[in-house]
Amino acid sequence: MDDQMRKREGFSLIEMIIAIAIVGIVMSGVILLISYSANSMRRTTNTVNLQNETKDALIHMTTYLQEGTDVFWDDIDKALYIIKEKKDSEGKPVSVEFDLYKYTIEETVTLEDGSIENRGVINFIRSNCPTDKIEDIYNDDNTIDQPVVKSIVSSVGSVSTGSAASTVFAKDIIGFDCELLNNSITDGAASGTAIGGRCLRLSIEMKNESGDARFLSTKEVFLRN
Image (cartoon, rainbow, N blue to C red):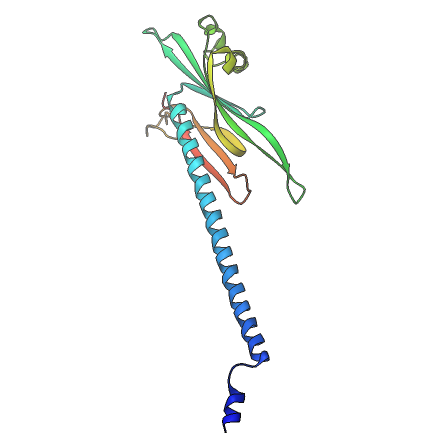
């Protein structure tokens, strides 16, 4: 009897191998689950960060747009020009300020599918129109002469001249677009007179450096002046 009891003590080699295999499978599943949760949390965090960045960018642009008296969009250079006028009692401009948001491509990335993606930054430049150039920026019908404005901004719109303040406004940009719209808000009268200034639709798309988060934000803005 004692011999039989001693033979039954402990585990056999096969039982040990099976137990180790089961523990290995369970641990592999746990590790995969933890890894998936960590990656999912990182992607979510990156997406939220991009959402906050695009929100802050649009708030910044909205603030300056609503202060402007005129605006135009250069689709070739991907640049948004905001013109802010100060007039005297007779309605004549005595000073003009230019704000510029310009998308600059810093690198071109080839994706796995062979497509090309541009990545860059949006620079914010603020400059003043020289007094002797104020009359030059207006056409005969008192509208803004866009080529003249672009020429003035390009000539004084660099940090080295000391005539403008230029900063990197937003980074990780893969898309920046603007569309000027008809102002559809009216005073309710039969004439349907538009209230307020011009309206435009802004679009900013960002993608983080690791490429696991991407976010597009669009907003319509009305100029107050």
